[in-house]
Image (cartoon, rainbow, N blue to C red; front, side, top):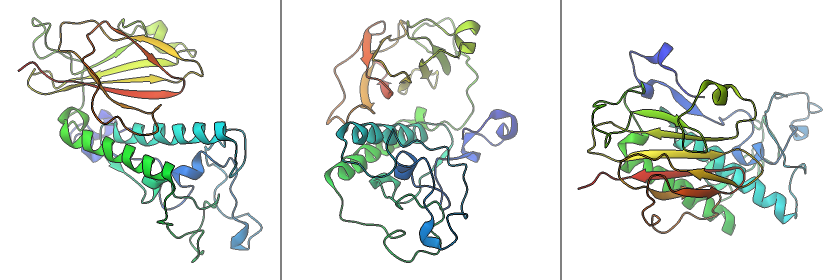
Length: 270
């Protein structure tokens, strides 16, 4: 999904097109609702369409009234779309994913000129919330150049003598310590922090924290002499916050709910 500097080094990250879903296959909502394809309506005994969907139904196949399953699916949907829109490169968003469109489990709906394939614009409240959350991510991406870099990161601080400048990219453990080989290679690692910076001290820095575990996690913000952070997006929230959080100092401890992503922005001192 993520462009790498090996094939794209001369052209930059924008040459890489990132996507989760496309016109073939599941929609994003169906990706978190169905484990198996449901193409029976195509009249081929469900033989058409790929079986390699890499999807997860959260314990129930298809629609359910279970509120816990519904919440988990919506959170996973926000995680997927957040990963897409916070990644370096050019994002490709399948139309309708921003409002939770479903094809009722069909991953090959090319021949269905009906409500399996149509977009239903009568949105439920949770779909309006999802739309607002995606809009907020797009707004943040547009406002902050650090979220749409035009060159690949190399982990180098432009001025290593000045601790106010952060390296253009760095990975951190939940403790706030820099990555090491043991942590990076440990299959049990579930909490990661990734800091991005333009390294010139004139524009915002970004910190993405991922808790991929099924338990809440306490995470120490990397402790440096840079500007304070503000939490601006959290996939644990059904709706995006109306405004950024209060300032959060480097070294502060934050709690992440299970299976969530947070985005922090650090504005330079004026």
